[in-house]
Length: 284
Image 1 (cartoon, rainbow, N blue to C red):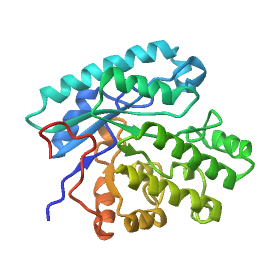
Image 2 (image 1 turned 135 degrees about the horizontal axis):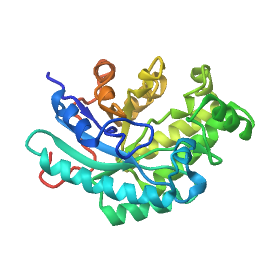
Image 3 (image 1 turned 90 degrees about the horizontal axis):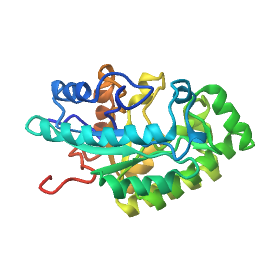
């Protein structure tokens, strides 16, 4: 069977993201050039206030207000590209959420204001510490939680709250919390962590959400995508929809490692007739 190339979580660009490259149109053109059947544009939401800015954003002199204005320009450009290239690719316009103080309420406001096709629910902070920003910040978050087990439990608790509050059509990089932990296979099997993993997977199943099979982990040197294999086995047992995402941050990353991810899902007998999040009227 010919399996379609798709990305449920991608389409970041240097035009609207401080740690990405290239224009959003160039990224869309790259998806077309690689023969993608459909792709989601999922730029990051703006922060609720200046306290939630990333260091790179502060260095650029950005403010929460400036990023909110940039987000509005992103949504307008994404809709323009969706229409302009409709005869070549199906583009779904979404955004990726955060979980800093005030972010969930802001995400709901953005959903009401811009009516995205779907949202990607992500958690990147524990106690307002961006644990995925650097190994130093990861250690700081670990210390704040009293150790790795506490860090993992706090992450999955925040993830559940995000899932139940926003009901995102796609749950991003489910086990991102392992990003700087070489012992993650051992950590995820700890009973308190495992209980939370199972609970969150069941919530995703019960709400009919999609798990992002995020292959961007491979470009960062990880040995397997997010979701890791032991959790993926549970997702398969529970019958979850798992769809590949390249989490691209520029033209060079479009489709990177995607075929490896598709091969993993195919071997595990996941449904490779990829369901689309928030399909627009008339889409199948």
